[in-house]
Image (tube, rainbow, N blue to C red; front, side, top):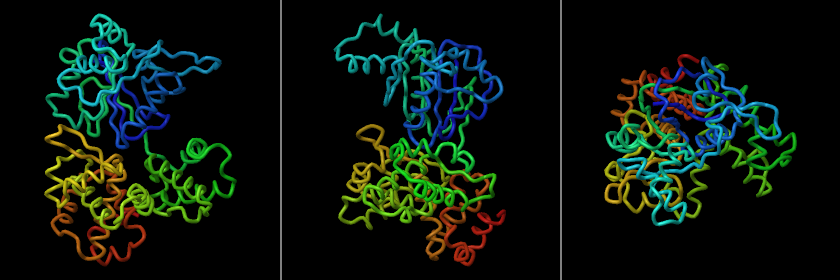
Length: 412
């Protein structure tokens, strides 16, 4: 099995690579990320079309030569890495059941508007890597079923190019690991103009507006950690630029841009709920949902409807959050699961809740005790979210809970 694992969030740089396993019959990419499928597909689109011009890391070129050789883009003398010499049609599979091959057959019939696709044609397309099969959310499927569905000796006998997205590590053998990073302050200046051009349009901001936007982003990154550790999930840059676009549309000053991640996430959430007649009450539901989603281990994962109902939400209120675009419903109709559309948003919402409850003296003591007891195992992203949430009122936090304060800020 040839396996490429993409970890975290996606930019145009690859942190490190290691050699692939010897079995090259099935080319598999396991996309492991926290911001949904969009960034993964953007990365793959660049890789499929030869737009990645460098793959830093040991054995990088050798690894990608095994997947597909570099090629020259039309009208461009530079060389770029790509998955294959030929075009590939991406095909998204929501649930592979017990076989990717069978799921692809059903999907191809819909795409081609045919009741029955020739088995010979389908097999040829799959085996010659003309179809790039994408299975979203393997970590949220039953482990035995998902593993069986994507195995080359079982449910993926004909499939030769397969992308699997997962919010949790897959621990697949013979995997090539790629670890793109969050945005650092140094990287921010390299990508900001491109992000502005995509989100707002080229030339939409004057120099002063650009610097105000950059200053707000820089301020968020400087709030937490020492200089070498300043990072920000890419999705928050997009949300900030969306906020800037709204201010431009309304003719308002960039001084109204959010100054903290807490403020940015709250405004984003309230915007999604803007048609709600009682936003305040629904925001309480959102925080409850984030608490359930992050659970005790503070790791985002799809949770059963029963977990949300036990926490005090109702089916009607869950549907409202799905309709707003905050949650995504998965699973069977009779046994639904729910996940947040964007994990970093859920992390920040839950971190905000934890810090505010501690500050105000109404925290769940058992939750705080468990958090402290397993602090070394708490994901780094959630620790950073807690730091972001506590930045505006460090002194109040120190007085409310010195143990949490020391854990967050003793190294700073």
